[in-house]
Image 1 (tube, helix red, strand yellow):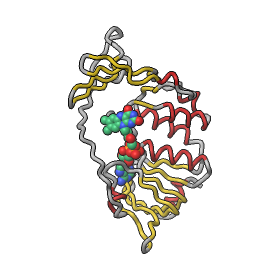
Image 2 (cartoon, rainbow, N blue to C red):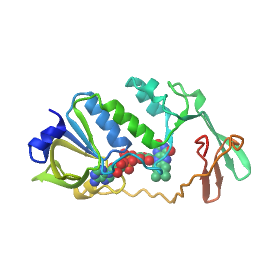
Image 3 (tube, protein in one colour):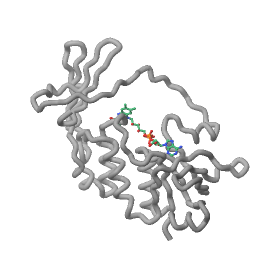
Image 4 (cartoon, rainbow, N blue to C red):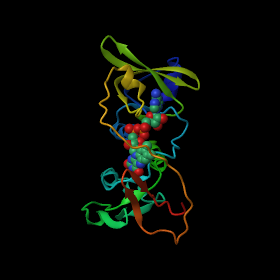
Length: 230
Ligand SMILES: Cc1cc2nc3c(=O)[nH]c(=O)nc-3n(C[C@H](O)[C@H](O)[C@H](O)COP(=O)(O)OP(=O)(O)OC[C@H]3O[C@@H](n4cnc5c(N)ncnc54)[C@H](O)[C@@H]3O)c2cc1C
């Protein structure tokens, strides 16, 4: 029985082994791994899709090593991307090579520049073959459910109304403003991040690139991520 029909027949309730709240890289990757292991898992994502144009563009060699170990690398590399092997920084007027990834002893000694939503869509598509994994979009966890001291699941808002999910394990992957963390009473350790980021697109001509990844001056930094035409 599919998860959906199970929830229908149970009157908007669902029982799983693991409920993951948040379909970002953490939640989707964990969902994929658990689904692959046959663990009955649901991933809840409050948005209708993974499209977020401010969540980064770099997939790193260590991530691609994991893709290789999971047998996903060949298909992963078919997603349009640019490959960054060297990073050059401009410190004031002085150019300095800040990284040479080509020397890494990994399957992919480069950073793949691709939007995060492509990566998340890829994990969703590949995870679809696991009957034990369900990704539920437009589904927002609103409340942790407890049985005395034990967390036993969540209540989620869905387009069809509230859904009660009971789970052996509930994992909060709901990002920086996690409401599950707050409701569980877990404290944030603020290590300080004294940077504000302004994220924007600029059109690019083929002839524009000077290969500079970051320009740094006292108190300021500009990172330019080459996305081919912008
Ligand atoms: C401007 C910027 C640039 C970055 N650039 C890079 C980069 O180039 N490379 C890189 O590796 N990293 C980059 N990062 C960091 C990267 O985006 C984060 O480390 C990563 O997104 C964290 O993943 P996550 O799954 O923990 O959380 P998130 O990506 O925040 O995902 C959390 C998910 O949970 C969902 N959610 C929240 N609350 C609920 C709820 N109650 N119910 C259901 N769903 C919920 C959210 O919609 C979201 O999809 C960048 C970050 C920023 C802000």
